[in-house]
Amino acid sequence: MSVESLVHQAVRRVDRRNAGPLPVHLGERTCAAGEESAGAQSAGTIKVVLYSHDTFGLGHLRRNLAIAASMLDCKQQFSVCLLTGSPVINQWKLPRGLEVQPLPPVVKTGAEQYAARDSAQLFSLVKGYREALILKTVLRQRPDVFLVDHAPAGMDGELLSTLALIRRELPGTRTIVGLRDILDSPATVQKTWREQQIYSLLEQAYDDIFVYGSRELFDVAEGYGMSASLAARVRYCGHVVAAKATHDGAATAALEQLCWNPDRSQGKPVVLVTAGGGGDGFFLMDAYLRALERLPPGMVHSVVVAGPLMSGEESAALHQRAAHRPDVEWVDYTTDLVPSLRAADVVVAMAGYNTSAEILAMRKRAILVPRAAPRAEQRMRASLLARLGAVWSVEPDADLVQRLSMLIPEVLDAAPSSDSSAVSIDLNGAGRVTQYLLDSSMPRMALMEHMA
Image 1 (cartoon, rainbow, N blue to C red):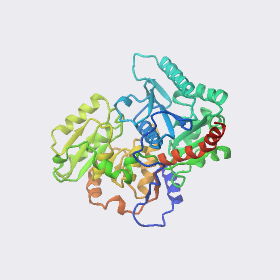
Image 2: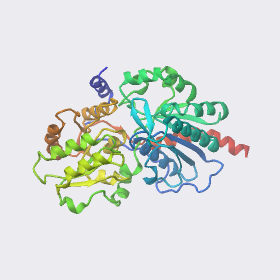
Image 3: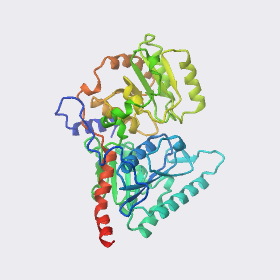
Image 4: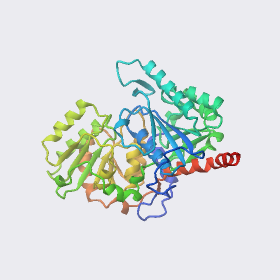
């Protein structure tokens, strides 16, 4: 089934009877914002270990930090340890109380292919060390919940020994896999899962399947061919965004520093260009800068954020192209893009999960340019959201520069997204994960209190 057919099918499932402003449901926070996490672990604390392989980009890290922050906002309810392979974890502002176990970073070199980020290291040794660290951490923590992000078997199967250990030696640990709603085209996901025996792994090793999305937008159980027993374990949590990316966080974000100099914009509309981590964002930023050359000088003030994972060579080439333009501000990267997203008049971005969700949460006028490969994920997401009227979408083809130059003025003249008719998007994913873990742990905690 083509991407276009899947999008049409998803759009038909959405209830669009209300033609008013874009309704974005944020839900209720599980605990009051600003509460500090417990300094010492109490007997009733729910111990959670999060696994995030982080082989490419920043999406997995940002999603897991949002979930961890939601848990740790609940005073004395959770202790959280994050296993992460992100090479930039030491540059990130972390939720208070979060314990981090770094894993040696690896990079994705192709579909299901990986290499050590340090080219002098042998991948098999790096993988072996990562696997040992994961096992050691789980044995030390003996968690109540082991929450795995995105990859049921882990990077290149590195979780299999840990999952087997938990099933045999830690029967009290609840194992959960958290999936983005759109992973790839359904046909590709089903083929990969059959080849890698993921269906059997989900049946035997996982108690629950959290979906960070909404069934109305994409039915994961149907799309990925899950059996009835697996479908019964699926729990749709809503999209995950950081708390300050929601309306509840607007006041906090407004006080934080923008990544650009407001004095340079001189009252002109600000277009923020971002490609997340930037590792595969050169094509977008190069096309945008070329499109800008076709527009009247000074029409907009452009802020181009390269991202921490863009190569030095690519960053230098783009910086050189932008350097002669006073209406373009270059930013190497920022660890907190949310205030800048909120303040921008228009966002030009790829169609990654986190950026797309934040654009929806802040009701931004946005142009999404999905990457074409190696997965269909971004094309599906951008096309779906565009057909629902939430964003504009442009295919990354040979006409990209021309289409951007024509679309930027159109989007600037359009009404803000909050005034358009679009789908209801559930963005309380982090809070709902937290609440589910609280609810499912109540019987165990009650038993512990009774025994005490």
